[in-house]
Amino acid sequence: MEPSLHNQELILVDKWTYLFRPPDRGDVIVFVAPPNPSQDYIKRVIGLPGDTITVQNTTVIVDGVTLNESYVDPNNQGNQYAPIINRHVPPNDYFVLGDNRAGSSDSRDWGFVPRKNIIGRAAFVYWPLHENNDGFLPNVSSVFASVHPGSAALTLLGYGVMLDTDPVVLLIVPVLFLVVFRLGSLGRRLAVRGVQSKPGTG
Image 1 (tube, one colour):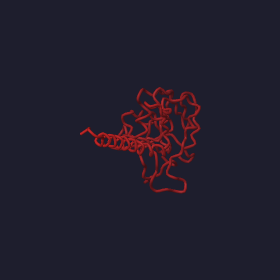
Image 2 (cartoon, one colour):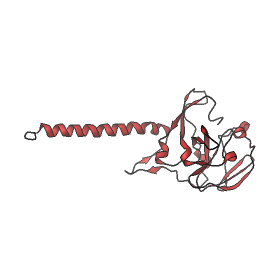
Image 3 (tube, one colour):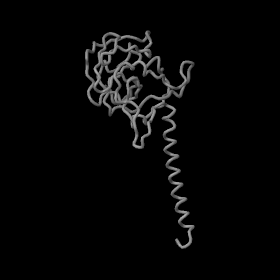
Image 4 (tube, one colour):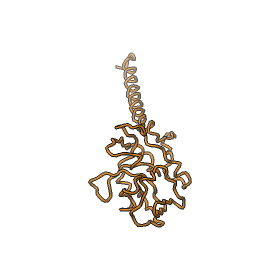
């Protein structure tokens, strides 16, 4: 995944986001490798279910839109695989590519990633931090801006709250759940004490 990720880096995998929305184009995901289930791979989502993908040499086209892939270093560009022409992504599958195109084993080689294989989203590099790495992976959504929106937009939860998937928010969500749970528990305890303290309730 050079240059976005480097060998030996330790990565925080976010398993929360995909409970609320499906993977989106540009997400870097960790998944059980279809060609070798004993290994986990990390690649970038390029195509969603229903998309039509063409890969000719180093040109990637999604639903008729040629991608200008800023996250692929020209020095790492390349394609050792046969061309893919208008390949349709099946339901519940994803088309993924490595950023190190010249040396990546990805959907060009072994096909699609089933949704059930996806472990989570690579959210944060926590060791080591480099001069070109502040921990957060860069947002590359602009690369896919001209492609029709997928089904992975912000999700409306049951109480009408929009959930953003910014990594900072993802770190806060579990804390909010804990706070709400604690406040609910505290409220019940206070209510019980109030009933017990009333005369004639014993």
